[in-house]
Image 1: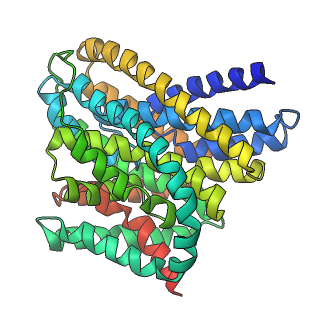
Image 2: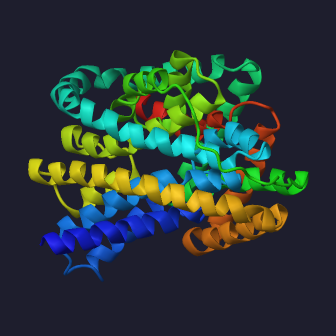
Length: 395
């Protein structure tokens, strides 16, 4: 059994790395596909092995996602905030440093997980049961925080409402709302940025391989304080939590990338904790595990062990990949890469979401472009998930 667990662990690392490097392949999509396969093709596979596979894949993708997010400008919802400070460093020839700041954040996020896991196991069930009726109001407070932390508050509020209304319309079009996430989020956060990159004809300068130096204590304390929000609040991703955390930590761009990496890792890890403690699925990975089996204390302990080893190995995988990509990225036309990625995303949407998905993808893409041109944070576009969730809980 141990040999099989190790095998599925490394398979998870491999597929998580591959998925992280390919824009548009979100963990929610892989989780849904894996659940479908477990019912048919993988029916003979021990579900414990599948859990190890899902967890190691999720953690490795959390690390690797920052590479296309920074080098290609095609992030997913969790790494969307890395594009602005990451692109600043990329244009200065410090793309390697930008990705490694995120990777070091993920690495230290694993340390915070080890420190917080026992206290959270003791506290979360009591806190959640006492505050469940407050969830929509807390989501409203978080939304107001996101808007009022912007310099252009009216534009930020408009961006939040526009994307929120789009989310409401889209979720009412699909019979299964989960099918709408791929075209909606890929359009808002991926292809919109690619179109702008193509229009601006960005040229990447030669990249330097320099290790980042940063004061870690303040962003680490901040991420430890705010990341548990991902357990109790639905529709709040690591990007929104990072905005709150940066307000507490008062970090510069480099500190923010480190903070975002830490919170991303903790948000993914805490999704398994939320499933274990309060039976809530905050990520596609947790939802996939929930569909496969019921968590027991022994399986949850295996998940934590898998996370720890995945964090350690994924850090070195990320370091190896970004070092090599930094050295060859200038050999390619950034515009051609962006066009190729955009074509790939269109094909992905066509396969998994059909004609209706393509329509939503186009609308979401131009909505994303419009909001980006407002010169506000892209995280305001998470109104597409937050506003429908608020309405769901209130009504």
